Length: 253
Length: 242
Image (cartoon, rainbow over the protein chains, first blue to last red):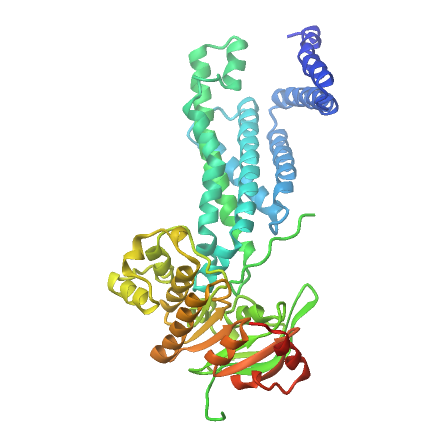
């Protein structure tokens, strides 16, 4: 695709801008910011990836992954500032998910140990883990706040902190992972996944594209479940002190 | 009075939240096997006192002794099983009457036998057929009775009751009052009861504490409410219309 073709595709940005202006939706500013940001960010990533792929240096690959984890943490932590030490917990979760998935992929020789495979797959895994973290934290905080009386009841009857928030924890893990599982049930029927579509458009064999997409889907399933469970089990103890007393969530900063 | 044992001994206890003092330098005793009623205006710190006693809060300064032992020396779970706490709004978990009743044992990984469940339901005056019903279908009085029965599953030696009859009609109130006296006599349980109803405090209580602004202003036999010595208490009692 040439830059001229890309310029022409801006017509797809003009359509929502015109509609927003006509109907007074007030989306013009955000649409423009989103467009400019996506062009700059993706082009920058494209050039960076070109350098990384050409050099094949392990240090560049690691730097890219660190950058992804840092950006994902920065984004997700805003949803969990009420939980003590959320930044550390998110970093630990993203690192674990990355090591687990890449460990299996590379360890079993499923994908080659090259930047071309490691970086895009890491991007998908960490990106998905970030979205899952946001979904989980949103739900968990609201569950903890709305069910504080039940929590106190269980503690007052001699329950442990884990028992006191068990229901809130399970509900939040389920609620955050269900969208990933549900979307897999209709995949291919309702929509063709982006990565697979991209490969097919780029001229790849559709069956090969499907095989790769399946790999990613299974990977994201693990990512979703591991992220929610790990973040949940890292987060709930901070709601209690050593005397098993329920602490109020920290105020939003 | 000196021959009575202390179930809970408070020595110069102070507790504050975010710099605001809720309990001021409180000293007093809840006597073993007796019913103590706690009265005072809203915001006097009565419920906080219960949370301190049940280990849901920790005092900033002072000592709380339960059965003669410093409260911090009890593991939290053991303390909370020993000091039962029936919450004001009879909070229930989603589920049946039986599931709620069995909760204290479920938390210990044990089962509540059907026999024991029936015995407890009968004790609090609930029909045994109610067992499979959802707690959402219970009336306010039934919820309170179930909440008390649930607290009794742990066989607490001290039972804290936080305004458990405040939202009930007169008949249900009398039912619960009779039940509490029965539990006190039957198990010898030490009862501490927060109430806004001074008549109830007089008739049910052996002893009464009057708390105002986190301070224990007056305490003694419940008849103190007839002729309080303290002027603040006199004004409080006068202002009560219940």
